[in-house]
View 1 (cartoon, rainbow, N blue to C red):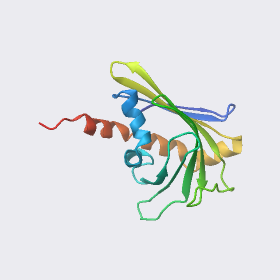
View 2: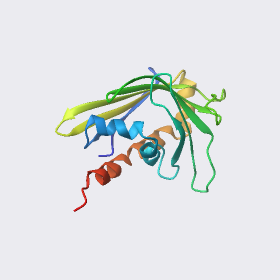
View 3: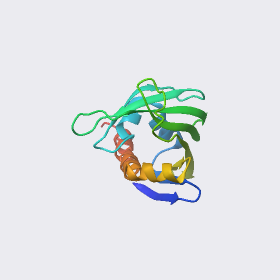
Length: 169
């Protein structure tokens, strides 16, 4: 199922993307923990991500870039992993960065919390909750297409789960 809701709260300075998936929480966790799986869905279809580092433990870091349809790389981004509770949650700080993960001061640092919740019947609800440091930061990221990009990215997960659910005859 594609994204079920996108909730923006300009007062609380948040945006939350929620989806329900036909998979266990452990399987959904693997979509985040395995860099090759993460590359298949993190980023809109026309801007696939390449993770050059992913250490999904508290104090760990992820570094990635996206490649546009013209072959051009976007600026790097990095995640500083604050906390994890496999397979239930990830808390991180997301920012544009250089190749080493050093934040770019021209862009806001966004707090992100991923919640992975078993809702029964072999289904899992995943929410990606983003917290912005200011209204200007929220507006800037929305103007850059963050909502559309995240919606498209998350919308790719169902096809991946369907592939992995197929058992060869």
